[in-house]
Amino acid sequence: MAEPLVFLNAAGACVRDLPDFARDGQTLKALYAAMVRTRRFDAKAVALQRTGRLGTYASSIGQEAISVGVASAMRAEDVFLPSFREHGGQLWRGVTLEELFLYWGGDERGNDFGGPRQDFPVCIPVASQYPHAAGVALAMQQKGSGGVAVAIGGDGSTSKGDFYEALNIVGIWQLPAVFVINNNAWAISVPRSQQSQAQKLSDKAIGTGLPGEQIDGNDVIAVRAATERALERARAGEGGTLIECLSYRLGDHTTADDASRYRDEEEVSPHWKEEPLIRLRAHLVEAHGWGKKDEEALLRACAEEVDAAAETYLATEPEPARAMFDHLYADLPPDIAAQAEEARDD
Ligand SMILES: Cc1ncc(C[n+]2csc(CCOP(=O)(O)OP(=O)(O)O)c2C)c(N)n1
Ligand SMILES: [Mg+2]
Image (tube, rainbow, N blue to C red):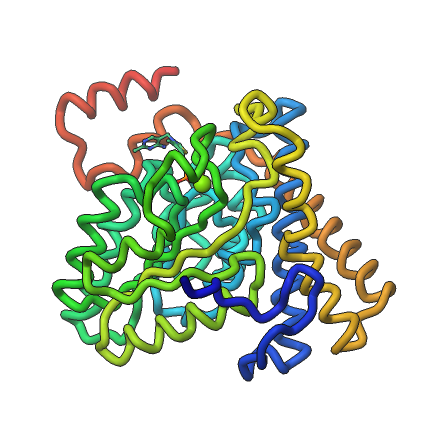
């Protein structure tokens, strides 16, 4: 069985020749900064939830390399269809910190703007992003736009019919789509071992005739390199790709979960040595002169930016109840119009 693609191992050592983009220190520093910024956002979001100022929140701690690596390989005109845990990719695509706080605060305006206009909102129904992505990719193919639809979902999402159906149609119609699996080893309390008998989740591509590849999802270089290759294939009219990124959910499923009820600390703790920030930082220190001052300045800048965004979020008036009807229909059907009227009176 082929080993997962990896360039930087857990200690930050290069285990194969780096792709061109990864020889450039500025590019690597930008990827590192994006992951640090995402982690700071995560920490603040959890703190706000714990103090009753944010809704239930899904942390991406330890999995930042996946969505940052994927988004960094994309072009603006591609369409990103993320699941709820891919904050890093949304931020990379231009969604603002304020918008993300608003979204998780229960105010979905955060989904309506920011980032390339065509990006899809966060996908909460598990696996529904895959048929959406197939549809987007079909539209792109028909228009000859040269764009690619890129969906990300969890290991658990690959057990849904939506996933198989969408992957199958991507294969039949040779659609320009890339499906990325964020395999964090858990789907709430269901471990990967109970999710599928497939040796690799990327093997699920075999039955659709598409290429599937398993990579180290904690190595942002591997994620970006694999995504770039898949995007090139799609743009060349060669169809879709499935990429499985191996990572680990270091935190609870969401702030509404207590993972200590179903998994032991002995299982979790080794994974802290494999998380994506440590290895890229070690490589930056070794190969690009990254120093203590650079690290401190980055941490300070991210903390200030995230704190300021949180203040803006906290100072934003909540949307009135009637706002939930705003973007549903051009003209509300009578029964729904009556409900909207009722909400207006609140
Ligand atoms: C259609 C649907 N079924 C069930 C749920 C409840 N649910 C939310 S997250 C989740 C598990 C998802 O696991 P996975 O796909 O591995 O993603 P992860 O949370 O690990 O990132 C489930 C079952 C849902 N949101 N949507
Ligand atoms: Mg999972």
